[in-house]
Length: 393
Image 1 (cartoon, rainbow, N blue to C red):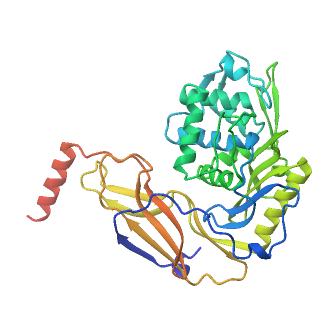
Image 2: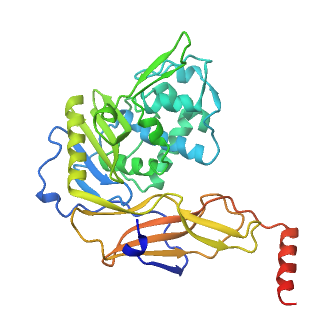
């Protein structure tokens, strides 16, 4: 894309006043003109991932049991742990009796069995394994109870008001609820970790391949095979919740998230999600401005060990508009905070990218450090001082 043609980048330097991207909060202006795209669902929502723009909703703030869609939050905490190097994909985990005892959907882990994080992730993403979810929860937080507290802390961090979790799997429990809107926002956050779809897009695979207890994984989300572009995320079903699905699709560089809750059958659930996706791709298109981890600017920090520090986009950034509409009024402003405190971990926010359309702010996205930034050693500072003095001799 020729960015110079569609946006002007204005570098300004201000103290940050906000650290979170703007999420969808206003109804789509054409909502009242739409017919019900999901007549068989009790609750539904459709958003574009990068902007969070709300394209459709139906009772999206009504609290309902999320069933195994709970695992969208479980996966989010797992991916965060991997990103923060607190967990690695090739690490082997020993399965506890508690994890092995989980009922419902499972991958039939045995107490004392050992399995890699990579395979446990497959067990959650493809087969919705309750046992795999608890095994990773215990590894990350020490116990499922502690992990659930982290899940609810994340709910608060994301500013969600209608979600509360009691377990990591979605098994029926009192006071365990969410909404279509909240599930979409959790999915939006999860999709910052783009490798998650490497798992959720798999239709079938095997665990313990070639062993006596080989297990065939088949994705509970059949749309990954039957709807072009669908590559996640998570189904759910209990008697109370009925059939639910948090789905995401990528087509023509546009990623959307659709959530359906409370359908009576799998067929009705999939039809409702397909209807939402059809609506999105038939009526809207996006314009990609930045990819995740794309360089925004380099900043010279003389007190850092590596003085040139690369600042990158924390996630992909797009605008969305109706097909045929002009995008000539877009403006992108890069705001950097120069009050840097060393050392800084990889992913530390150092500014924001503000996107405006016709003067209206449509998104704010953090700029972050691409790598760890360490304080310069005394020897490094001495060499820089000498080099600086040499220039003026």
